[in-house]
Image (cartoon, rainbow, N blue to C red; front, top):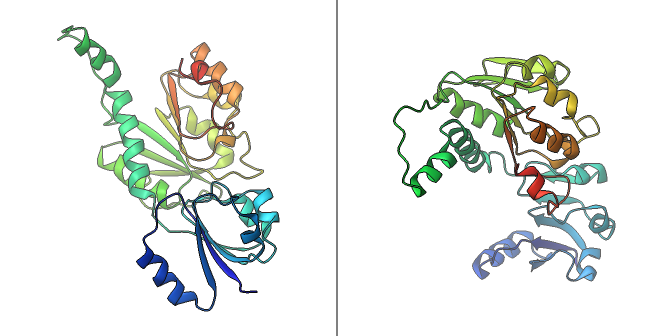
Length: 266
């Protein structure tokens, strides 16, 4: 029975690309599926898995006893690390899109684009209104890896003061200051924007609770592009509804799909 390289991606892979992979791993068999769990018999023979990672969980990993290597197209895959197989990813693959996404939020919030779109729809004209600028604002980035550094670089280009937070407090490129995770309250007290990029670990589970939100400025804005488990969802909802912080964008949540969308949107 041949070992298998299994490719589980939702995109349509061109035959020439599959052939190229087959030439590299011959005599290993190569199969491509859109749903990792559609044929569980394939998992039993899978030695190498190429995937986006969203279906990699304890159930699927337990069905792959021969698994030795996973190539993922995401920055974190904590369960894979627990399993003890070789884990590789594409460095900086998400740097540009995640940075553009983050900057679009910062600029939209700062320039109050939603409000002015509403004014436009209502044909309202106010020349006296004051509009904030990103320039001079303080942004704290929890997670100073490749994506964090990419975002920090762009924030610096906009004239923002950039604070980094990591496990060691060791300075990284493009940051003005660096603190450890344990020093987060002091960082939150002076941050206008807080960006979460941390992986999901025992240490970072519910890393942001009511305590952290109470430490933030009432005018501060939270952006979570790390893991949903970083934030205690009920505490975030409470903080938004009570005005502890001005708002939040959560690209990831504990529950998927999010059941409290209407509550969070407040």
